[in-house]
Length: 143
Picture (tube, rainbow, N blue to C red):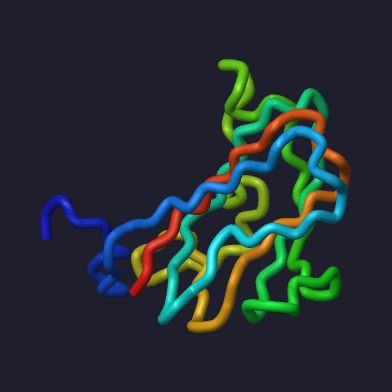
C-alpha cells in the first residue's frame, strides 16, 4: 500500500492525535500531568519536549491505569530534558524515543511504540519547579 505507514496497516488505527500540554513557568515540582489516555487502545510513537527552561530538568514517565495510580512507584523511568530543547535553534527537541529507546516495544514493522490498552494513561511528573515554559507533545494513534 503506497503512502501508508505501517502502523495504519498493522493496528488499523484511526486518525493521528497530537495532544499538547503547556507547563508554564513556575509550575511546582512534583506536579503530575496527564499527556494521553487510551479509550479503546492507543499506540504512542513518541513524546516530545520543547522547553524555554534555562536548565536541564528531570521528568518521571508514569504509565499506569487512568486515575489515582499516577504515583512514584508506577514511574517507568526518569528522563533529563536538556535546557532550551527545541527552542533556541541549536538544541534539538527532546524525544522520549531517543532518550529511552528501551521503554518502547518494537512492532512487526520495526517501529518503536508504546501500546496502551483501554483504561491506561501516560502521565508526566516534573521533579523541579520549572523556570521556563514546556510544551510537551504526545504523538499517538487510536485504534
